[in-house]
Amino acid sequence: MSLPLSDEPKPRQQIAQIILRFAVVSCNNYQEGYFAGFGRIADRSDLDAVIHLGDYIYEYSATGDDFYGNENLQAAGLRLHAPDKELIDIEDYRIRYAQYRLDPDLRRAHQMHPFITVWDDHESANDAYEDGAENHQPATEGPWDVRKSVSRQVYSEWMPVRGDLNTIPLYRTINYGDLMDLIMVDTRLLARDQQLTTVLDAQLYSPERTILGAEQKPG
Image (cartoon, rainbow, N blue to C red; front, side, top):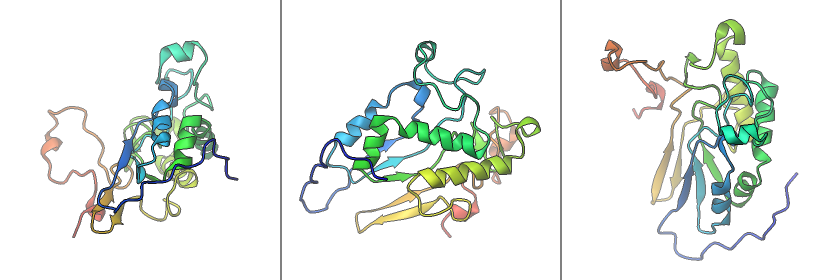
């Protein structure tokens, strides 16, 4: 079902395509505040796309020890995450995406502009890497591969990507004629090594450590 637009889309400027103009966004934490910036983006008529670099949602609860957001809003009972729990299973993630899309400014930005997106860590869990995450405890939250797969599936359901990201890669290159190639990469779930906790760790200098993995690198 398509939601009606509150205003008619403004015609884009009819000029020779010699430039590209993007809005670049990331890290929209519902509990931190209102998404007025997306409203400003929606008002623009000169954008070719919105590039979202990840952390489209956050996985934390509304009232638990893992609360992450604006404490004044929390005290007033405003902008609290649903469900009120850390996201673990598929329904948790689906409800959270649905809640974020209830924000009128974010919804209108999607109505007015195409989005080009990649995930960061909070679409699954804080400080995610290929084999785990800082905010995932297998002993109490189950296998990481299950949670990672669930988060990929729900991302595929809610975000403008071309298929199930459990079966196709997130990374891709988008060609804008002879103006530019936009290279979108997966720096989290595909091949990233676990983060080091100190710069004194000798592995910091290991040439084998990776964020992208070999698959994404040019031949």
